[in-house]
Image 1 (cartoon, rainbow, N blue to C red):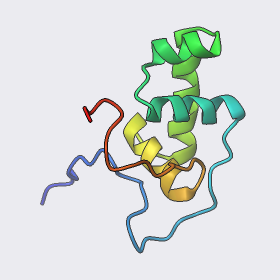
Image 2: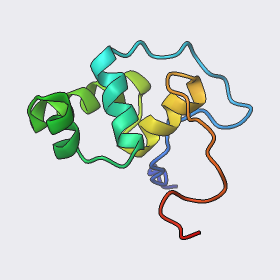
Image 3: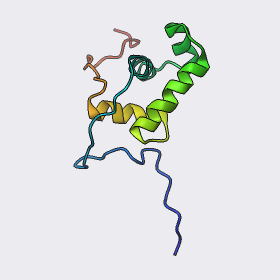
Image 4: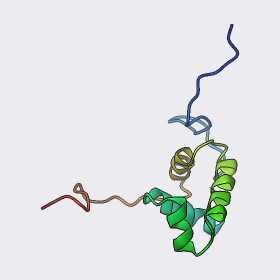
Length: 100
């Protein structure tokens, strides 16, 4: 019998109906980094926006992944949205770059 479990990038993220613990306590900079990441910004771009180094942003994401007990930035974003740490505003049905 194999002891290996299948890789799941969302491992540790509560699924529908799953038990959720208290939301992680993120710093203001960690929350801002998550919000910018949700907007599609890279670590380099977030560093320029927040006037810090790219290493600092990567350190924030390392802390975020540890606090949410996940292994990827995408899983951390999903967990933050599911737990209410960040909220996503509903937009219209058309994208911003779609022609009229």
